[in-house]
Length: 107
Image (tube, rainbow, N blue to C red):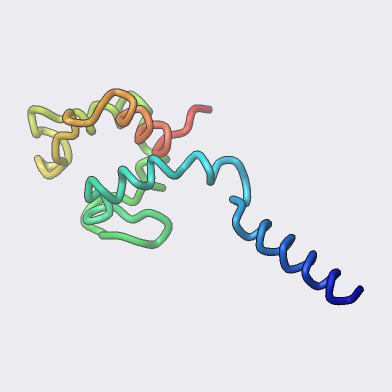
């Protein structure tokens, strides 16, 4: 009987730790993959991890609108960020919207 209870407890605990703490974390996956694959953290800090060449994602969130962030990401002229921000126009519209929504969630 005690062995059965122990087994049930282990299964329940392992299930709970595999689930995200909230639904927002589950939705962050695609954006975090893009941030990592596109090299954003070479210059920007995300939750204490990354570079300090440019504003952290928290600072960007505090200082820029969704439209301004979108303009900075699609930067074919190279005139934003002292010409240091690369152009991300190679990303699909869905990927761009994923990044914009992660960086600046809708109110």
